[in-house]
Structure formats: C-alpha cells, structure tokens
Image 1 (cartoon, chains in turn blue, cyan):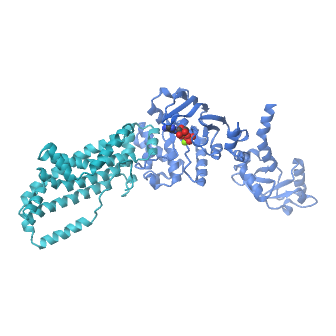
Image 2 (cartoon, helix red, strand yellow; image 1 turned 60 degrees about the vertical axis):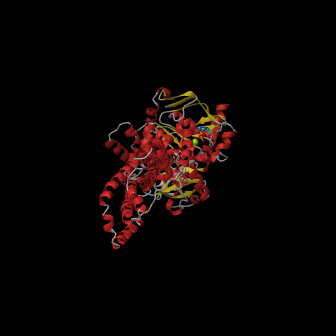
Image 3 (cartoon, chains in turn green, orange; image 1 turned 90 degrees about the vertical axis):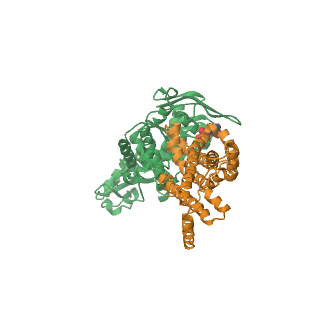
Length: 377
Length: 248
Ligand SMILES: Nc1ncnc2c1ncn2[C@@H]1O[C@H](COP(=O)(O)OP(=O)(O)O)[C@@H](O)[C@H]1O
Ligand SMILES: [Mg+2]
C-alpha cells in the first residue's frame, strides 16, 4: 500500500515559487492501479517522483507498506520500486538482457539467475528470449521497446511500480494492445501501481481508482465509474468530456448484464414450445441453438404466431453476436450497425451465453445515478 | 557532426580512408623510380633514432592529453559545474583558434627549449579537442537515460560509468582521434624548439635543399600519421558497443 499524507512540493524558480503539489493525500491499496489523471503541468509527475524520491518533498510524508520512505536509503528505495517512463529510457549501449538485468544486478543477483529472469519476463510479453536477449534496443520496434521498458521495471519483482505515461509514445492501436496485455499481466502479478496519464480513456480503462489533479491538488479520487457518472465539479465534468456517459459503456462487460436464462430452443423444438418459452419469460424472441449449443438463428413471436412445425422451419439468421467478454460499447456499436434492440452473446467457444438488450444497457447507465439518488433521500 | 551543446562543438574525426595510402604508394613508386631510395637510406641511423624520439613525443603528450582531458571533460559536465563549465569551454574554444606553432612558441617562452616545452605545447594543443568532445558528448546524452538510471537506483558513479560514458564514447573517441591527428601533425615542429624528432631531418633537409634528407624525415612522419589515424579508426569501430556505434 502507498499512502501520501499532505504531500507538498514547491519549486523555487527564477520567476518565483511554483506549487507543483499542494497537500496531496491519498492511498493506493495493495494490488491496485491508481491513475493520476489531469492536464499537462498539473503536478502528476512531481507527485510520482516524490514517491521514489527523484524529487524530495517540501513537506508531507509518504508511506509504503506503512514505512515512512524518508527514513529509507534513497538508492535502496529506488531499487525496490519499479519505474517506467514515457520515453522508455532503455539504455542503447546495453543489450535487452543487460537492460532487463540492471536492477537485479544492482541487487547482486547471480548473472545466470538474472538472465533466466530476463528470459522469463520476455516470454511473459510474448517476445522470444532466444531472439531478443542479445539484441540492442534500436533493433526493436517501438511497441517491443515499450514492453521491455515495462518488464525491466518488473525484473526484481518489486511490490510497487510507478509508471509515468508508460504507453504515451505508442500509436493508438498498439497502445490498446499493450494496455490489454498489461492488465492481463497485472491480474496475475497484482502490483501496487501509481500510473500517470493525461488520457481519460486510458485512465478509466487501467485504473481501479482515478485521482484527478488540477494545479497540484486532487479534485476527485474515486472509481472510474464514479468519476464518469458523478464528476465532483464542473472542471472534472469538462475534463472527462461530454461523452462521459458513453465512456462508461467501456467499464461494463457483456457478461455482467446479459441474461443467460433468455429463451433458447433447439432446432427441432416445436414452434409451440418456443412460443410458450417466450411468453413465460415475457421475451419477444427466442434463440435457436444447434446441437453444440451454438446460436444459429432466432424466432420472434410474430414469426411463430399461427405457424406449425419445428423452430428450424421459421427461424431467421441472427443479425450479429457479441463475445461475452466484450464491453457494452461494442454492444451499442453492433446494435446501431444492425439496427436491432437485442444481441446474442457467445462464450469463448462460440456457445450461447445469453442475450443483452438495449433496455438493459440503458438501465445500467442509469443505475449509479439512481443509486446515488436513493442515497441522497 | 551536428551535435552541439552550448559553446562546445565536438570536432569530427578526419576520414581519409584509402586516399592517403594509395597516394603514398604512388609517391613511393615515384621515388623508387627516380633512384632516390639510396639517398634516403644514407640517413637510416638518423631515421631510427629520430623516429623513436618522435614517437615518444607523440605518445607521451597524446597519452597525457587523454589522461587529463577525459577526466576534465567529465568533471566539467557534472551539473554542479554548470556555471564554471560554460566559461571554461569558452576559454578553451578561443584556445583552439591559436595556431599550434604559436602554442609551441608560447610554450618555449615559458619553459625554454628541449623536451619539456615540446611535450607541454603538444599536450596543450591535443587537450582541447578531447576536453571539448568529452564535455559535449556527455551533455548530449539524452536526459531520460539519466532519469531512468537514477530512478532505477543507480548511484551517480554507476550512472556515469554504465550509462553516460558508454553513450558518449563515440563522440569522445572522435575528439581523441582529432587530437592525435593535430598532435602527429604538429610534432615535426617540435624540432624548432629543441624537442627533437623527425622534424630535424625535414627542416635541415629544407635548409640544405637536400631532398633525400627531407624525405627521410617526411615519409616516416606521414606514415606515422596514417598509422595513428588507422589505429584510432579501428579502435572506434571495435571498442564502442554495437548499440551506440554508428559505424556498426
Ligand atoms: N524541476 C522543476 N523545476 C521547476 N519547476 C518544475 C520542475 N518540475 C516541474 N515543475 C513545474 O511543476 C509543475 C508540475 O509539473 P509536472 O509534475 O511535470 O506536471 P505533469 O506531469 O502533470 O504534466 C509545472 O508547472 C512544472 O513547470
Ligand atoms: Mg508529466
């Protein structure tokens, strides 16, 4: 856990003092990612650098796992904290192996052990160790360098990581990929992470919590959904953008809102049975599944009404399906693209996993508002 | 070379490549054909003796310039020296514009004649490019390398030796290469202030209009220049890590 207490930094500059951080107090729980978010120059980097003492605080305290960091040796403290910067900062004179092994070697690890660790980490981000250990940074693509920058910070397995716009220099498409990779990794390694970003989309995606800064002060420290649903003031509402409600769509997965008990029938089920199932659930369509439980078509009440025979005879092909792991943004996008009010969800194996409706999506977006409203009463 | 930092501009290494060796070969053939080899051979003992003097002068003054210049350049590049460094580099830059013959003359007025003033003059003339390139090369190392190193828990000495110096090495080597070229080119003048060396044959040869004597001094001098530059080129190619070596 990282705890900041009334952390303040005043830079003395020729044009007068600059307050870069103003009584910042916050807590990052163990194993969570906290994103420091805000416009350029609001003090995010300064706060981050006070944690590993690249900048010494004017006043205030920092505790890591309960220990006051000002009582620790600066160099040892830094070796125990992973640090990733936007420019990546891989040393061009060192091979990838040497780069990854910097901190382990500083800590006195055996060369063989450090090398094995480097290989293991390269594997973790999908880079073939045999191919890359002996390369130089300039022989890697930007995205590969960024991955190495991240695993270099993880090399000595530090419990705490500081990341200053780590994916800022990568093109948008690769950035999404690396963000996803990193989140997947984090779900296993569970580091306590402070992550600086100026991009609201990145913040709500990466953060368990988001701290929004303005002129050295924290304006709001909340979960991404809270920040989007209930901006604490006009500045934050403006910063997160007019489309903040749409942004919340990304925070919810299809799985979380789809109805797995939606009526589904086999191809050989009688139309009568299909109609009964629909009426029972007050649903106006039923999904038709093949023998492997894969959705292959649908029947609506209208189509079934008055018809006889089996489902297969009247069913129509499905307009589209969505993976259960997708977020609601993908759902809305598909709904608009196909002009439909509902979509079938499938699991990783393509099997039926439920149905998500537009009504449900709207309800989810309204939910936190309503919850908030009830609490206020 | 477009790298520059404040008033300090590193000097590029001369790249003569193959032109000089071929020219020398042609010259050698010409001389051989004109039957002058015999005349030069008359001075064999002098050539051997004076060459030794010459090489000692080059090696000692050049070596001393490296041993002093690199640490001074490092010292000046430290952030705490920032203010002083700018002034010092300005003085050094003015110093570079003084012709090397004048440097030797000034050295003589200071130290008299003999080995000492020759050594000192050559040392000073070679010092400037080394200090200048070491300083500029270190300042040109991008700040984010230093920041990353610092943030990962390297000590200032570790940052210098593992990150800054390796990344400045190419520029530092270029400075040394230039310095040695200046040194080798100036050493024949050492004779004028009693420093000995192959200049003795060259200048006496000029005075006596003795072509054999003149060439007996000039050819080894030229050969030494080519050799030193070749060795420096090889060192630059081989000693600098592949990741930061534009030659590889
Ligand atoms: N070393 C420094 N000296 C003087 N002022 C600084 C220094 N570092 C940062 N600042 C100032 O502090 C403020 C916050 O900077 P920074 O923390 O880098 O912001 P951010 O990372 O949010 O863009 C800015 O006004 C910046 O100019
Ligand atoms: Mg910043």
